[in-house]
Amino acid sequence: MISHAISMRPERPSMMHMLALALALVVTLAHVTSANAQSNRPESFADLAERVSPAVVNITTTTSVASRLDDAPRLPEGSPFEDFFRDFFDAPEGQPNRPRRNQALGSGFVISEDGYIVTNNHVIDGADEIRIEFFSGLELDAELVGTDPATDIALLKVDHDTPLPFVPWGDAEAARVGDWVIAVGNPLGQGFSVSAGIISARGRALQGNYDDYIQTDAAINRGNSGGPLFSMDGEVIGVNTAILSPTGGSIGIGFAMSSNVAVNVVDQLQEFGATRRGWLGVRIQDLTEEMAEAIGLDAPRGAMVTDVMEGPSEDAGMLAGDVIIRFDDGDVSDTRSLVRRVGDAGVGRDVDVIVFRSGEEVTLSVTLGQRELFEAAARESAPSTPSAPEPSSLLGMTLQPLDDALRDELGLPATANGLVVREIDEASDAAEKGIRVGDLITEANQQPLLTVEDLETRAQDARDAGRRSLLVLLRRDGDPRFVALNLED
Image (spheres, rainbow, N blue to C red):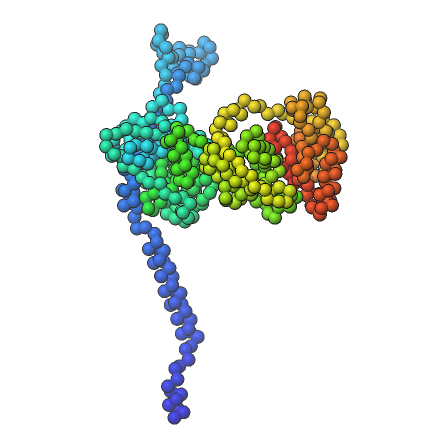
């Protein structure tokens, strides 16, 4: 019985057997993973390209440029080739110089059957004529509806007897890094071309306040500008705008303006012929950890108000030193997000703005103005260039209170007050924070400064409150900026 029972027990597997089973399992999982990856990769982009290409257009612009002998190569007077060059570049005697006609190429896409076309502002900027070529070979002249240099978006219009093929907008916010995309356009003037890649990054900022670029490795070259970046659903999630390249050709770093920005701009151009962005009437800056600590804010979030101009925010009671932490029922993470949200909020709307002030949250009701009107009115103001005068040292700086003579020298109004930085210790925290000779320090801990003694008092008050930093407001070339200075030795 015992032997029978022993013979019925399963034999214990050897170590080699177990290793073989484990290896087989790993290989099987690898095959499954590879198969899944293959199934997620499109076998072909042909159906998508065929579906969207009829709505993608080539754009040719023509610009007249005055032709002058001054533009020709210049030779020494008396050169044996002087007459030849004059005859070649100048018009026949008795006739005016004829203007040159420069041509440029770009791309675009139709967004409605009645012929509205989106492209980049830089594609059509300064053009006298705009010619549209469709995938079918149809050619039409286009009229400019409006442009927005801030986002490099332009809207064109063509007329045709029959409805035109068009493509829908998609939601760029729903796109994820790693998603497949295709770019369609007219690279280097070669005609309709399709390139595929993935979304490499989102939320890229290049240089503008309203930037929200999708980065892609789909090949984008000169001539692709203004063309669409498509999701795999055939929806436009970006307007191809720029590339990063040391050679001028694609190296796999291209940028498309997010559809969520472009749609709002295009809607305004279509309705008004220009953008109408909301305006708060404040200058703002991001907070550092030291600045947040200096004012008692729990974290460096929101946008700190450095200056309140005459307009909506001043009327609502906003003050320099306020930190905007919520705007129109949404949290504010930084200055860039606030600028975009204010611009998109509309003109004339009443919105609630919550600010952090003196350790408390204060709700203000602001009626938004129009940024474009403010910018047009403010273009004539010219900032003064400060220079330095005389001593009293504190926090690594040599400071002098303003007087009438110094105000005249610096071109400041009679109402200006504060301390001018005459010298700065290059090893000091103030120098490390970017304070320079000629800066005017007007406030400390959100209280005005008239004398160096005022600054000493504010610093001691901050130390007594257990704070390691002192928040000062300085102005440079007319622009305000907050800086948190270290109070620890």
